[in-house]
Image (cartoon, rainbow, N blue to C red; front, side, top):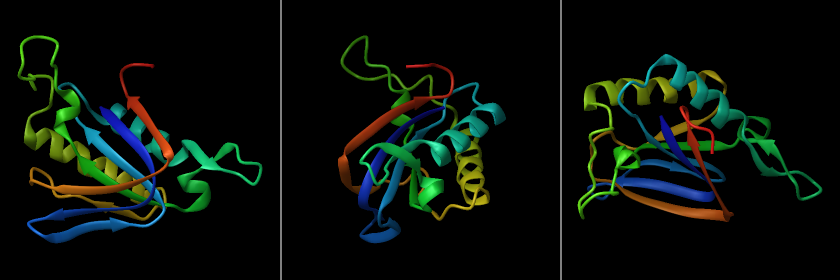
Length: 149
């Protein structure tokens, strides 16, 4: 499972002109599910996203998490995180999980974050979405449940 995490001042997702998810200060999580991902990957993402210390404390150091500050989360499914563009000119998405598997695991991550006590908004799985992100910092991090960066 891969994620791009962005600390934001605000964010929203629209589908066909209608807002389907909207947050104020918090995190946007662009989440990709790969072939072979399962419960262990879900648990990794839930724990890491909820507890990742990327918000500043009173000394200006990144020592606080979304959980610590009860920040809002916007989780958006993004299979293109598994795009492989090393060969040719068109990316291959063969490493992305099949849609029915990806959606089930994506929803498990969303539910896990809610169960952790966080307010979570979402995009719309398999829809063409417009994602507006007001990145704060900017702070952007990459997570991969199978690789350490």
